[in-house]
Image (tube, rainbow, N blue to C red):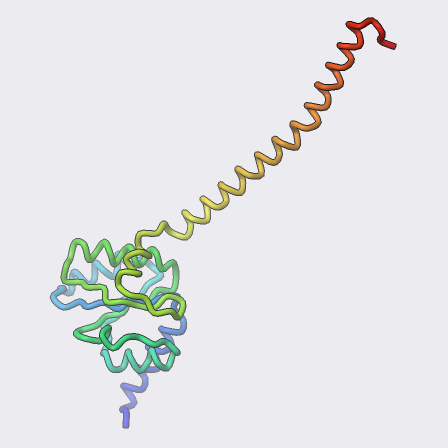
Length: 176
């Protein structure tokens, strides 16, 4: 039977899996305490990086309704639980791993869907949510300006056409 400490740890991990947008499993073997501290800072405010026990983490993931490959639980494991923008945290992990090859991204979960290490690296290559939203807003604004110019062009073209017809009639001498 499980000890109360292990049951509490599983419950806490289950809650973290359920409340986070993403979770990234890493192997941290060979990193110093100072490097782990730097890694935690590089993940941003919306991520928690915790060293976990493999068996308890696997049980917690299953209780949260997340199915993860058993290979993710080989070796020492730490999990980055992301409650904010997963792209920002994925970039932090990727950049830290470039400078510190001892950090290995194993895989993870994004919105309940399992992801491989390669998919997490692709996620890190995306622009942040704020940048994508501002690009979308800029595209909408551009289309609105084009529509406004089109609607303004129609009446002004009509006025120019009417003026041209008046001028033509005046030239022909039959203006009444």
